[in-house]
Image (cartoon, rainbow, N blue to C red; front, side, top):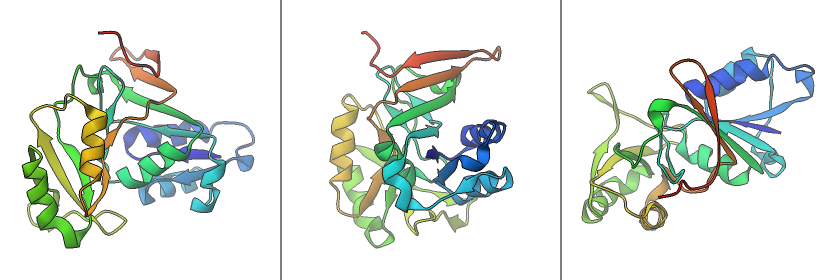
Length: 207
């Protein structure tokens, strides 16, 4: 059983999986409609969430990866399903280009929020030191996830303890999921500008 993340890197994984022999015996779970459609076009068999307990491997990308191998994810809007598969999989493989690897996070954290709780969550995020901004499509339309929720892209001056911040944000009533991923993947692949790949095992880097 193979889990497919979302975004450009996941689309590349679908293309590579479709080249494998005996793909008719492979079963996949997709985290977004877009990746599901791409997988179907590649003649991959898509199954539903009832097979999550059998998930052997999950392929995904990342928006940023810090020196301790924590990640920010959610630019594609699929962070809830991505974190579910990330948690369920026996093995997690992350692929990202070299620009996504940073010393410490310097981009906003996507936070998926139930629409009913938008205002109160926004206020509590500000109290927690964040600067939340409601995600929109263009300038006029509010972005709605496939789960019917909203996303508050939230900037923090710094996040000294990523795991602590993840727990703190998840504890806010109305927050569905947080784009901080602190469970380390088994392997990270860094795509360099020269076309080469660097394999990095999933442990924290030395200080």
